[in-house]
Image (cartoon, rainbow, N blue to C red; front, side):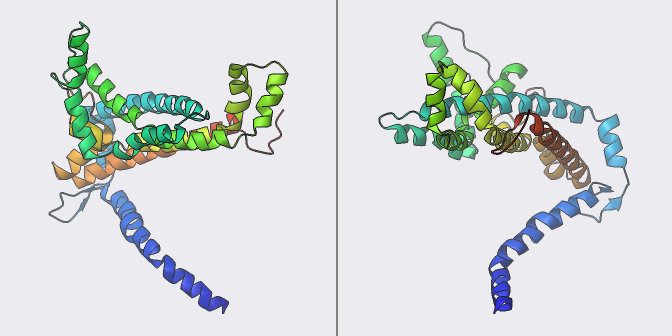
Length: 294
């Protein structure tokens, strides 16, 4: 009977297992092989050893520029997005009238933010004659060239990422609601204010959730593609030319799948290294229930 149940369980899991093998594992392994080849999608791959990687790190200025832009983007958007998501979660944690309506309204951008339609809308909002510049002119300020200036373009793309704070906010909100209220009552009796309670009670208790959101948001930020590609296509002067856009251009515009695979694997190694660093550092600032630390 147990054997039949095991077979039935595997049968129900088979669509997921097949999908994992066909659409994740095989492409993952294939891309590693292709990163050591010269492959243009039309002819058979030609093994070239480390040539793609040597070119990346020795003579490809576009890669260095794209890597720098990607790092600036990630290390700007992730902390700001987490801070803003936590701030909104704290506000929405109060028991107010119509609070569920507000929670839903703030979560919606996270669902729509990655869509092509929102990226196009964002481009029109920050256009030369868009809503933002019209608002600036109404208060007597000069319009800003949001997409023509390299600094402004990256800032505009960053704002789109920050606007999608809903998913992190919902997770923070769930963590805040799980905290025992008697801890705050005891702190209030001892004379602790709201800020002191937040720093010494709230933050330590939600560090596991902060860590989870940090990892998830960092991985997603490194893979950002839709917004920057639709809005600026990496311009101007490659100021928003993130590594995923570079990978796409090499693979499907220049048909250099081998080189694109090499870039993708470098990106994977960077994400893995930063994730391992985050896990290593977590022992010093993430506190779980039952931890005994001096």
